[in-house]
Amino acid sequence: MHENAEEGWYTDPFARHDARWMSAGEPTKLVRDGTVTSYDEPPAEPPVQEPKPIESEATTEGADFRRADAAEAGAEYDESAATMGAFDAIGQVGAPNMERLYEGEEY
Image (cartoon, rainbow, N blue to C red; front, side):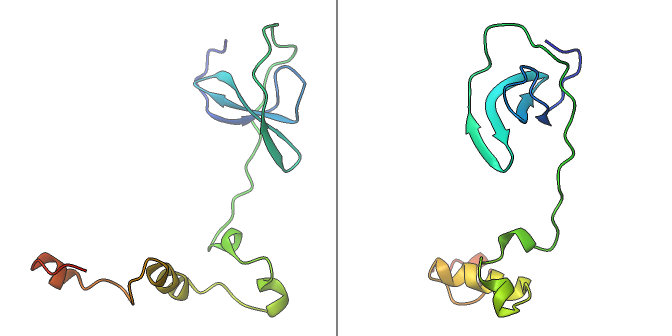
């Protein structure tokens, strides 16, 4: 369909949704309207407009991974605490001792 092989969010070439995910320059069924993402197969008819890239909103420092109530609590993102929390979630206390693992110790 397109000479470029872009991938990412573009304006919907069929003008049915706010955005449509393009893969290898071809429209996919992944669509977005506002903040809602859903599926809608590309129609059989030809596109009605040229898709234009949509700039993504980059997030940094894990702000997009905060709990919904963290802002009210005044909590700042703590990468170390998040890492330890992830280890605790899988039943491991603290970071693994790589030296002991290399020596063959099992968890």
